[in-house]
Image 1 (cartoon, one colour):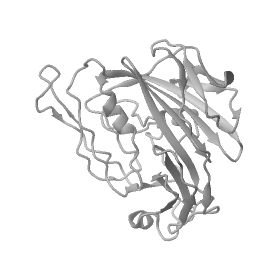
Image 2 (cartoon, one colour):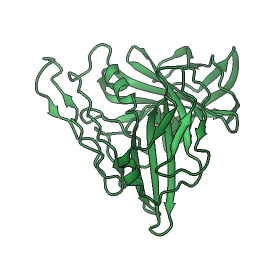
Image 3 (cartoon, one colour):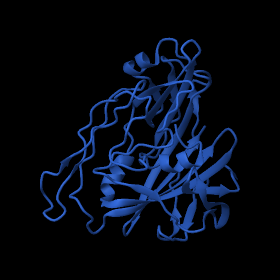
Length: 326
């Protein structure tokens, strides 16, 4: 689903829109439902009607979701004690086939304070719902590098520094370090070396030296059990039955991603789902219909077990994600 390129890996863990209010659909997306939208009240009174939030994504042509999202409830307006103005994300992925680890980090400053609970609510996946996206081969998609996140109001978001390098350690030894640099014109942290040997240690920690984003010392990353699908092991069709050994941690979920190419129409059909980690899944009927009877994936599905935790320090919220799979 995500976490293949460093920037997508780090930002995708948060699902943030790089600037502006509610998340916008890509140029190839159709509406995936109608959300309630966010509302923003008066900062001084703490009450008031507030402005009407934007509806959830309505894009151009091609994407069919099973259900529309529900917009987030807005905050009381303004910045109060405990509101978040800085958001950071560190992500470590275990790729089981190659038995390697990859990591990335990115840090943001947002133009108005938001309650941590609002941001955390937007991080929570909508489980067992899929989105089907149809992209015309060669058609530009200006939103490809912008992830989606429903925020109230007109909120701008910019990347910031958290220091020169962030070491990732296990048992006191450094596995890799995330070094500050520029990626797609944004400040991002990429690993040196590019990969580290797996499997995923149970005691991973990160230390942020601090800059605009403040220092966090010896932060424990969440543990995630090694994951792989037991079926299907080959190409996926709309009626495929997915099975795996369920996780034992209640806050994990499965990210599923499959794609097919229609040689006649020159279109790529991509299916993304976030699944309950209970060991079995089949595509809902609406997803099967959107995929089309002739859908057959390029190869096996890409599937990952995800786990995310957050840690707040003053006005800074740190999002920590680990995944396992391929």
